[in-house]
Image (cartoon, rainbow, N blue to C red; front, top):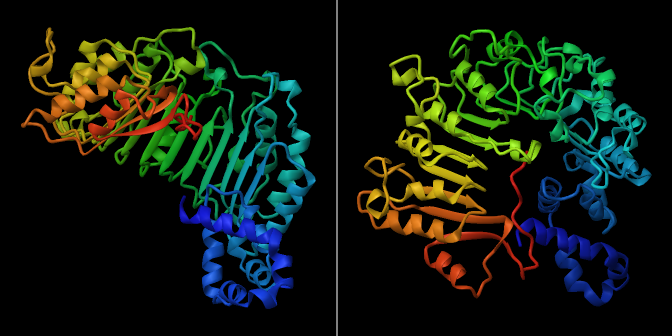
Length: 505
């Protein structure tokens, strides 16, 4: 248990007994003096530790105000303790009252706002969702009064109407000088399916983000299932950009996409899941047309291999250090079986339009980290891909074929090498992280590489069980994993503790 949990538990236990404790002050003089004579600075530091812990509900801080008058005065007087605004479904009047109190007590401090109106019991009918635009409107009116103090704003919904309401009401905002991070998520991944058009059609018309004003401090934008009017100055000077699970018919044109890239020359992290710009299959494309010279991390969720190949051929990331590849078709269209072999082959082949490796669009030889999520591919193509990863330090396999993991076994330990070539793949590998993979395959990779003196030993290895149950504590497999130095995460079928969290979208 971390210190924040202990502090939170202490105050949670103290609050109900506060009145009784003070009535018995004479019989508990030593205890009361110990707790209630702490310096104000130390108390405030403790309160701040609780209030700023992102894993806690901000309501926790209100417990402090009910312990005693002195603590209440200290907590209410410091506006920084009340800057986290969180509302989740279902929203009750007492929740709104707490938000009103936070807005008042936070004074002029920047606000971090999280609105999560997803309903686990939703039946996927847009018209029957319990959270409507009429519920969103008064919440936005309340928060927009303080838009000058927004620093971070996260909105998660199941349907489009609450997102539309946000875009509609914020289009009149004149400025948001403190806004640094914006995340809008319509959590309906199936709208990204091939051939699926945006729904509801009547609200398809794009709206400018914050009316198209320039947001000077905005650096991180995440649009998941959310489209905007793409020809506007709001998406400028970003360092982080996520475009995920959009309906293909509301994505930007290639020219608009290029304008966004040109306006964000310092972009460091980019994620595209599903569809990027609208590409005409009959139009010849200029290779490496879209360049981000400083991009360090690229996460790519592919849904349609021919489209993905055309998109990748347009991209140039000469400073790339981290690459994440994920087969999102397994979520969006689970019936389809997608073979990523052409995609992996393209990445591994000499596809670069320049012979100068220092300016290669995808410099695989300089990558430090690669993650493969649900990627299905022929072993030969993946072996060629791994062969290019000469500087790779960290490799992650998440719900991927065990056969691809076994490619990391040095050739001398492979009985049927076929035409995989000679030499060990990923010779600089230091970390291996696996999820829902065969434990024996993971152990075999570690032990075989450890036996090769020419390879550096793996410094960190882990296996996370999310969809599968981990081996029980008394099983031989669990013992072998521990003896091999592999960290085990997740829960077994007989374990009641929380399991590892699945990869977020």
